Amino acid sequence: MNYQKIYKQLTATDMIAEYTEEHHIIPDFFFINRKRKGPKGWLVGNPDDPTNLVRLTPEAHYTAHQLLVKIYPEHVGLVFAAHRMTSGERRNNKLYGWLRRKHATAMKNKIVSEETRAKIGAANKGKIVSDETRAKIGASKKGKSPSAETRAKLSVANKGKSPSAETRAKLSVASKGTFRTSEVRSKMSAAMKGKVRIKLLCPHCGKEIAAGNFTRWHGENCKRKV
Picture (spheres, helix red, strand yellow):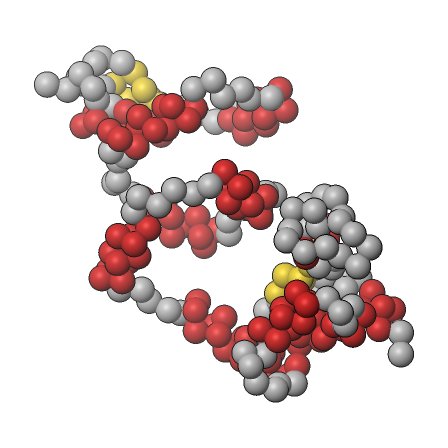
């Protein structure tokens, strides 16, 4: 049986379904920034490049990993990856798909208590994220934009909040010397074109400030407030 041909057909295009999962067409194990070599040595590039990602239903995703083991039976990493999808039990792809959808629905409707949020916050406080990890997070989010629902939730969560003096200092340091390309400036200009800018007068420093930035740097947070 030509497993390579079947795998190529399976991962040719994104599948359209209510729930899909992201799959690396060429396994990330084969790339130069991973720990293990592929069957023909290292591959140069980013495994998370959009051209190397495809959306599959959980059933197809499960099948894809089984096919990879058939194609590269000596590759330990691929065997472990396929085994993890079974959680140590024998499953067929229909059962796996059913469980993944149930899990996705459960996580979507999960309500995290304030106590749990506080524990997570305390556990993560003071942790230093390496440059490599930041680069990976940035690469995984590149080109993605939050949904309207997510933006609405963020807006509600951040309403009325103002950054602390420590956060403002960090933002200032991070932004210092930042250079915007002509492409970025053009996009910003096009986005603002035709919009009416509302300005508010700060009672402490007397400056007229755009409404969007007013509460952040002026008003109650103005450095000249007595």
